[in-house]
Image (cartoon, rainbow, N blue to C red):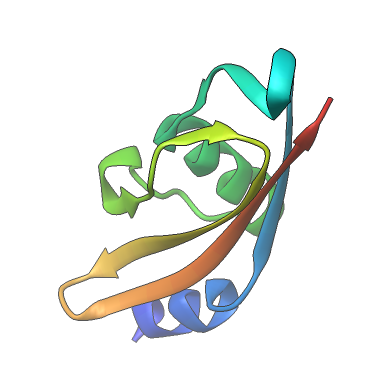
Length: 85
């Protein structure tokens, strides 16, 4: 039950992150699942293991869809927006 409530809390939400960039909007390094998990904890007070976050490689500025798996069959779809620091 708790996992379903957490999924409702996260589903459709947008996480905003800033990152340092080089030429052409490419990031120095990449935004990691660990950083996304830390942001979820900060903004929603939920402890999510980084391995439960499915995200594409976040190496450029922009919007990305991610999936947060909370339990078997329970997941939330979120957006990560990476902007220039």
